[in-house]
Image 1 (cartoon, helix red, strand yellow):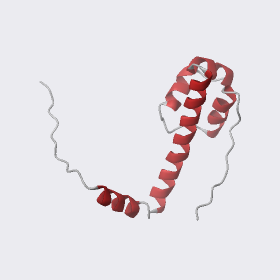
Image 2 (tube, one colour):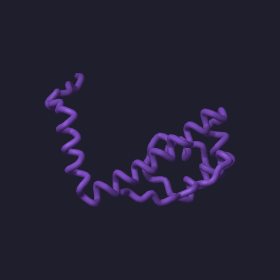
Image 3 (cartoon, rainbow, N blue to C red):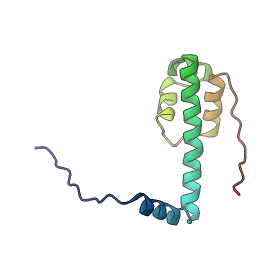
Image 4 (tube, rainbow, N blue to C red):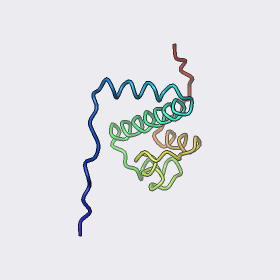
Length: 106
């Protein structure tokens, strides 16, 4: 027997969604989580773009980085538990170096 999914949610306007997001982002924990996710997302996108540009496979990058290709694949599929050392190895596998910087908000 198939499970039926009930549609018991309501769509909200963009204004209400934005107001709710602003309210949540006033909390320190939410800000920290969002900032961490944003940094990780940007890194993953840069790696994917570099791999595509250079026609590199997971296996090729992982081998040069000294990682198993499964680890690289898991990280690039947005698994959030990568350590900084692993991210630096991925950058090395692309022929780059990981550069962290502080960006101050106004």
